[in-house]
Length: 114
Image (tube, rainbow, N blue to C red; front, side, top):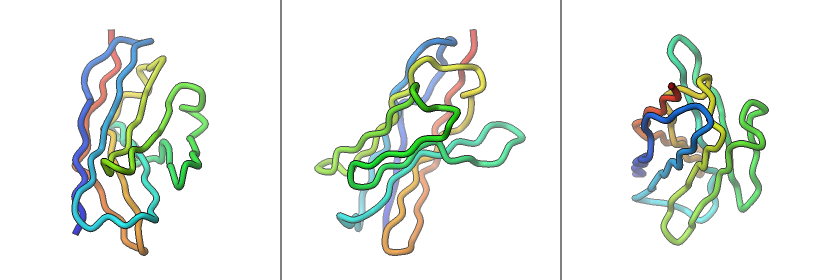
């Protein structure tokens, strides 16, 4: 079993920054894909960024502003979010895929507003 716990969300003004963290525990294998998704009110959940063995991919809407990284020793993935916009407001979810199984965190709220 795998548990994912996100932290770091909050309220920030437009143009500000936040850093989200996701700590994974349980049966974590060395080969896995970790990702961040988000879901805004009234919208479907969308992929924000992924990281696999150092290779990263981003949604077009966040390229150049968000950076995903991971600390394998701590089984933790991060999402550094800069130049935040009101449209980035959403619940952000951590996701882990390994051995054909998918795990989700409980989500952390990010609100971008003046």
